[in-house]
Length: 232
Image (cartoon, rainbow, N blue to C red):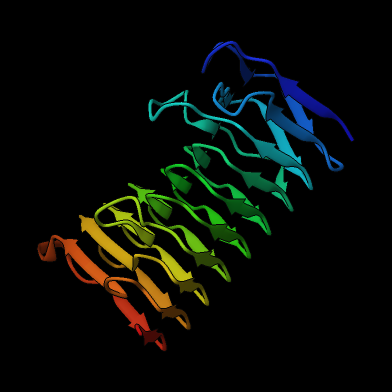
């Protein structure tokens, strides 16, 4: 149970970095935050490092959209990432390394995306993503990922095509029993996004459309099975 408060004079003047070969385990109701919400820090986990985060809280991370400045950015296979609260960060969490698993996390009030998924073969299960201003989850080039039992609410209202799930050049992903409620768009497809399956899910009360597609049809289609749409 540890609290780490970073006292920055401006955005980016301090950063947490877990180097290759290093180990950083955050456990037991620990907290990492900035002393000033206007002065925010980076948090980069390098490839080849050992990292886990369980039952802890991260706030105040990320001050720009440049890679390395977004907030918590994971470039390694984590040992465990479960039961955390990620609140008031620029990006809730950015995943660049394949074969990761994130379970039962609450990601709220992210300035841009709750989850940035730029990796393959990732499992996101039983997470709550609330208030991602540009989208709840943005899949940018991530393939063959599995999203199960996630809840996304009140996201996407600061971007023209902001959505609960935004799939941008993402192929072969399986989305099962997800609930996308009260978002600007429920789910959007863009670029080369095909062979994605949305199964046993609910998309409800979207402000614009439950489903929007600007994906290139030349490469194929996406499939919805036993999915309920309920735009009021």
